[in-house]
Image 1 (tube, rainbow, N blue to C red):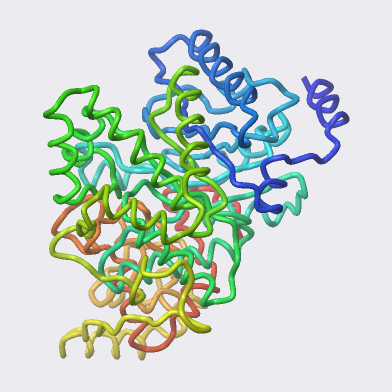
Image 2 (cartoon, one colour):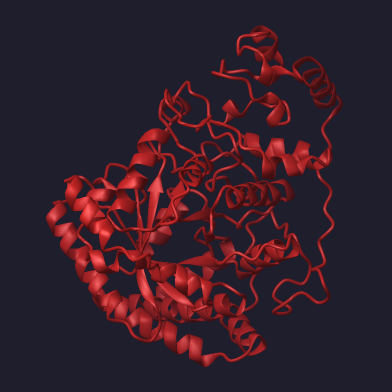
Length: 486
């Protein structure tokens, strides 16, 4: 076995065609597919994967490859390494492989990443993973969720030039602290070695432009892939049932989709193809390096998608020409989810680029904590300012009463605005997950605020947001007995 891996390495000349496309500004298409459920025969699933990959490799009008997700379509699925081994070895550098931290320790996830690299897969995107539908808090807390930041740091520490790491980001957040909480974590992931980003699924192109403008205003010019969806009726119902964490389907768009479906299923599908054309062209004009399309599961659909996308890219020469068609198609509907509607910048989608050197930011006040929270914050800072340099059980009772201490293996309060990150049911320590709700609610509960948005709010009020971008916070070893990060 070792000889086989070594032989594969010997014929690896350092080519990464996916990375080359991003580096050279070549707009690309990623077709999303996922590891199959365990009750599916792996051989049959692998054959379907090979057929889809063969169709992608045969495309000549634009670079087309696969984005293969892990534990996304199914939580109980085949091992991602076993599944992707079906792909031809000579084209593995073209594809992107997602690695889920769901139910996996950092050591295990790092091992999976290294196996992927040894097999010739270079483009890896770690994600923390979603909760299962119907999970209770005890279910979530009893499971590992290796944070994407953790794996990015581990991969960076290996200093392996063969690895091109990416990261996921969800810009579809609609309160000030939710927006900035996600952007602070994105910058931390870029600082930890991510070389490109892929957005969450969403339909609000103003939010996609917001992401580009925000990074450019910070002098950060990383390639970005916009994730889109070829919707079907059953997928729409799945979103409405809340089974797709982090995916926002505003009521205004829902009405349009329902009206399209009432005509006929054929009419509904035709409308989705046209919408995909418009979104693909819009993403290119907004500065994205490519799109990742979910819902294309057969070679026949892939070929149709390529034809439609290529036609859409050719149809629109200017931003203003595209914008007129986009507004005509959607009727200028509001794509923010009621009652939340915060955008970082003014006049999004009014121009292709910001007017002036920097885009004009919207004015929105950060909610000021009440007197009780202010007193609690002062006392925690006074009493626990050296907690990260003390034994974790030092002042445990006080920390439990005042900071919600969960008896972590080492205290991290000074790194997280003196708010214990273990209040996150997933145990994430470096910022919110992509599954948080538009208004800042925890993925697990509509009435529970994400603890990392509370942390972000305190950091904004104290002008200490740089800490949330720069400092790596290790995950507690209570769940992860060997977290592998010093």
